[in-house]
Length: 223
Image (cartoon, rainbow, N blue to C red):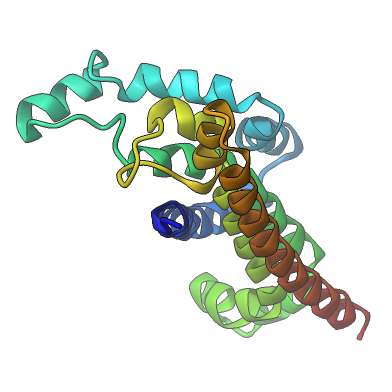
């Protein structure tokens, strides 16, 4: 059994989750402070990928990343390569698909945090950066870690957008999801089932971790 699809899925999901981790926290921290109308606008903008079909996300990405796009032409001119149909093209797709999960989880954690503690820190002349790094993040870590793990798991299972921008190329762009689709399309059901079981196993472990952190977070709020 060729394990490249697992390795490729893990590296794509890890890199994408690392990116969404910081973007999601940054966006959540600032958007939660906005007035109602602006908050609602940016909240909708960041979470709309959750309800868009993945193929729509993939199509829009192709418009931006394809060799015929402005960005694609520049990449071809200066680096003599293309973005699409490469393993790293899937990172763009996974970032867009998983960002809403990281953002919403971080935002919920920030909103649930006791604002009186932040106000007390300001009365003690603590800087915003100190409050953020030393008070807010440590007290919201369970929810944020759960969001990261959930985004990572979602990235592992992403298919629609990934297949459109990276395709399926054995030992190059193949992921778990695209490998399952390939084996099914070529009537190799036993091989497809092997990868289905691998994906289920990983997803089960990930969801166990998420549930553990959510229980810790709930317990922390009650105490």
